[in-house]
Amino acid sequence: MKEMKNLLKIKSQIDSTSIIDLNNVCGLNGELIVGSGCDLRNLRVIFSAPRSILQIGNNCNIAGIIKIGLQSTCVIGNNVTSARNLAIVVLESTTCSIGNDCLFSNDVIIRTCDGHHINDLKGNRINTSKSVRIEDRVWLGSRVIILKGVNICSDSVVGAGSVVSQSFNTSHVIIAGNPARIVKNDICWKY
Image (tube, rainbow, N blue to C red; front, top):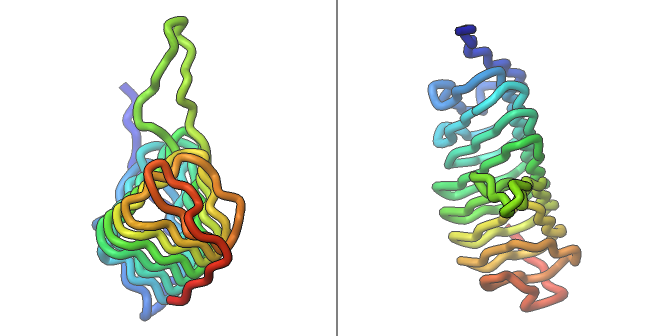
């Protein structure tokens, strides 16, 4: 049996204002890129397969877990803040892209995949993974779930407890419900 080495590449601009607990980072051949001024001491990072990348911008405060799989990438912009228990899962050669100045409340889940394959009776997979994009200045309320293939445009708010399973390609909206839908247009919010 061939032995696999735990190779983790860390490329960063970490300075004395950034905090990261490297004991919370594990996996195979992952690449972690962290900007300056970040507080990541309550973030656990799992690289579950080779050639996985996590890039976090400047001045981010993120608490929770991020799991990245084979040939997958998670890019988080500048000034992103999450409350406790953020869970991001990026697997099967997909990308999760989060813009600048986003705010995520407690217990938010973002997934590019379902976690298990589902096949039709002929054996063909019917639930392929798809990338997720959250643009600049998006606020996700408590217990929001963002599912595979979703795009949320800039300057939007997603209400607490919403399940977002389709893209919303309009900016300045409030999205809410299960399934989520636009409930208010022409809004803005400040953090």
